[in-house]
Length: 175
Image (cartoon, rainbow, N blue to C red; front, side, top):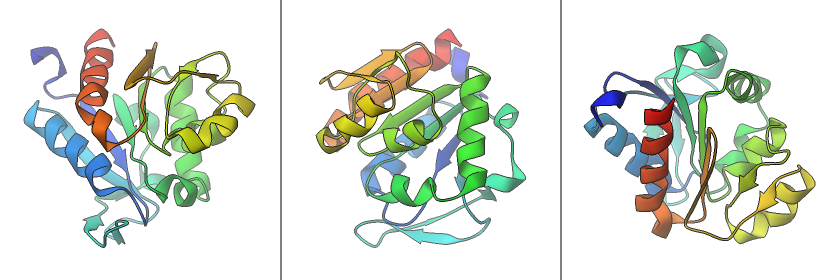
């Protein structure tokens, strides 16, 4: 994993994120030597998780660009529905997809990928209730702990976090 030391990763945050799906990747990526920034709609804003745990954004999406990062992680919970209400966040993910950056989404996270129009022809998983959304966005639904299709890594639930992180690390090493 030495090949990912120093890589820059954005982890997106908005209210009602799933605690483990944000913090597990943040700490695992930092442990691996990555420079991780929590990116939200506003800089310095505190966003409460589904269980009330706070996450403070380091920077606002409008103040960064896709080229500032090697990967973007999109946690689930209900935050993806709130994230995709912000043009600056959608633009960040659209630009990252266009640049071939690693895009990792878990649970409801693929909703952001639907809004970024980057799923056409890609194998994708996520929380089962968003299957129709993924397929309507052109994704090919798979029911697996982790699905990696090129630079896109997706998983279903917190139980899949170990497989999700393995997929993220593999995608980052390949890129």
